[in-house]
Image (tube, rainbow, N blue to C red; front, side, top):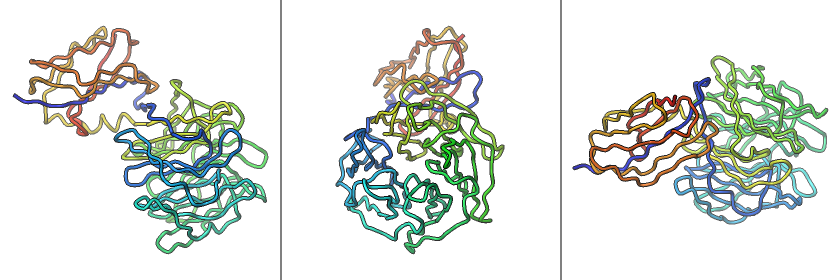
Length: 405
């Protein structure tokens, strides 16, 4: 007799799409609701702190997120002065916060965070004009920071920071209009910069790419949605994903887009199961994206989301561990799951998501006695194509397609 724990996940995919992202609520960001906070990930943990609340109060608290337990832990407050509108990134085992503003001045200082000791150390300041709203991304162990706005208006200069030498180097000036509130993403050794707004408050949807090997910028296909500011930017399953953001007023956008670098094309998705954030913190942990805090319709939020490319799971299927079948397929929504090699099977979790990444069904620790049949009832679901995954802990052992007629 064999006993086994499995995770079975069913994920909806619309008929017209060949890729889909699951967006799931996780534990809310603790502390004061905030926007324009700082954040990054280090060694499988996420960090969020600083920022500004709904009443203009600047913050200096600091929190750590554990994705395995979906919990937050309070860390020591930052020793730097309370600030917002910063740039933040991580390189190796350390995190960094630069630029931003206090209640009375724009900033150019750079602070390094050591998670093992929960301490901060001041490093060489950003060499450009003091500013807020910069964009930043990390390429080949160096951080690229640029654009933003300050006492002289918007900026288009860019610098890269080397943590080994603790030195900054000026790179080629950004080829788009001077702007602040853009987003930067590092993808396959190149720096992508998108969105933002210029001195005339024109919201951009342009996309530019910087190639360090040639020190040159090139314009690419613009994002297909409305021009916006302060969206999130992630890399999931080898694709850049940019979305949400706002018009800087009370209009938040619920669309998001994945970019195919080879084809120079975008695919559009929408999310309507929760609030879509502006001026949020975003980072990646173990191939998954996390987006949290920010504002919605002008008010600060504490929502925190996990974004997953479903194709990452489907592509990594191994069927060596068990013989899995689902029948009848297609069906009217009622499917039988059979795992033939195991008796007294205990399912660790059964979860179903809709197309917006919203969890619509969950069963925990369900016992399946010999011959290991389990009925999944999707009879209330709309007609369409669904995908399933059977996993043993962190290892996928089977996946496939279901059709509800």
